[in-house]
Length: 170
Image 1 (cartoon, helix red, strand yellow):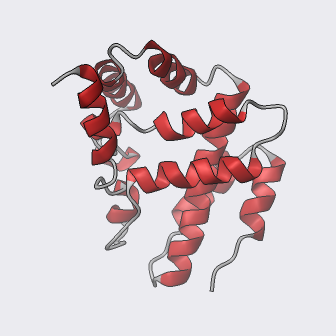
Image 2 (cartoon, rainbow, N blue to C red):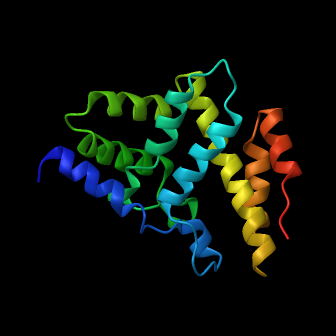
């Protein structure tokens, strides 16, 4: 398989890869990794500050979890150190983005949190987790409080905290 064909196949597999954290707490049909990336991109369209490069933000949203197509959705509860997780994801990204230097550079930007756009996407990642926790908490009887707490604790942008605090379902 060519490197491009491998990349495209991997992108498609993310549609079927469940987000492991939601599965761990008992959500029977959790969002997929692809749905999470799509949700972040949609949030970016609505919330991206004008001083940031929206195209770059969207690209980062769509690429940030792509290595999970190879390594899976590793959570802090899997007994894998943060360094080992980062090494696995870096190796997967190198394989996926072989022959795609622009994509590799974008993924590296996100992974290293180098640009304002990358930092904003990290924030969107936490906002999306918080919004998803609110949603699952409203439509199931499962306690999603740990996810909501973690999202609130990690969000640093007041505008995004305000979005999370204003969100309701049901």
